[in-house]
Image 1 (cartoon, rainbow, N blue to C red):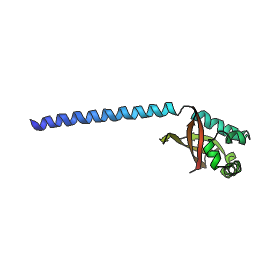
Image 2: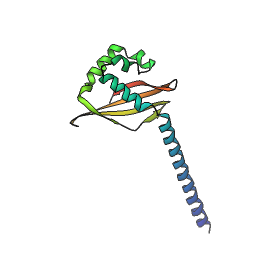
Image 3: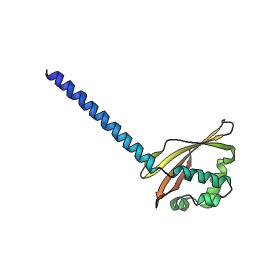
Image 4: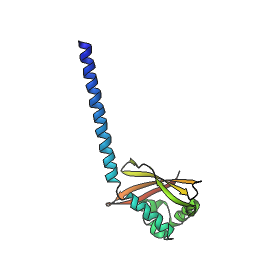
Length: 138
């Protein structure tokens, strides 16, 4: 009888643990979605500014920290090295939260879908709006 009781308690504990894990995962997923609002429009605006030749406007979408570490000339060199005019399609990956920042991998794909350029964007919320805090070619 004691073995059956242990099995019953173990099964219930497993169910409670699994339920807790589902609640925790759901809470974090909702928190991420709500917290990340505003990032997609920022990404779209960033690439539209570059496509329109408004590099200074795109540069101003970055955080003050980014601009302190990356000069305008370095930003121009970085963009020139990416050869963005070769890419037409943008695919967004799954966002990750690290230290109150959101990291998002964006994959730029060429029109013929033969080549791909993955970029990691780090976003930081500054005074209720998102800013690009880091851009790294993966």
